[in-house]
Length: 248
Image (tube, rainbow, N blue to C red; front, side, top):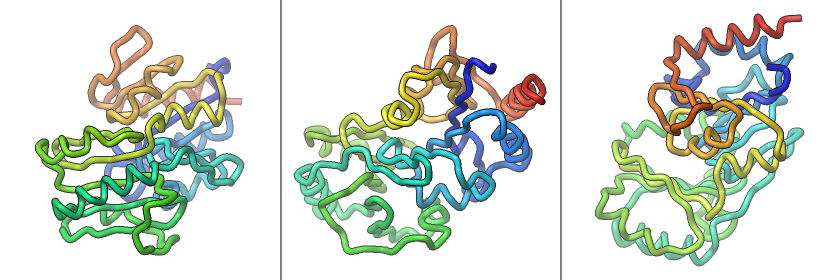
């Protein structure tokens, strides 16, 4: 294990199951591992919305917004912003289809969410760390669109300069600049160094694929001899094993 000093963890669905905190047993073992490994947290959340989950990890490097930004040595750095022309095209569709949204910038945000039961409301700036801003086409790191049916999804397929992840069950479309993903941001942080990755969603696939070993929580995401599927209980047992093997 000492040959692989980096452990990279997704948050929601991997370590966080209530949208509010890292599960107790996992949080405790991660604190122990944090003194022996370089732990990086990589989330679909912008870094602003990751921080309330990470009070016990104030100095760790972070990847946020599905790889649209990262924090290194306490400094937040944006990857490529969504092109202004692409944002303008997205807004035309949003207005025509009357779609609710969140626009994330480097720190602040713009949001219109009319469904008071939307699960994302408990995550959106829960630490009251940012300000809601008027909508802008420039320096947009990530866009989330809500209630996007498969028919609506087709409207976005010809927009240049973007990548997106579609969540059909939630009908959410998450848009970033083309080429931005968790693995691209991780490469900025650690270069070609070896790492273990833990994730549970399609936005984790490339990060898992490129890992020395990838661990998918709950279901297979990437086939391969170096890829494994874990339950949450198995994840905790594995991390406990790491801690015992590397105890001083």
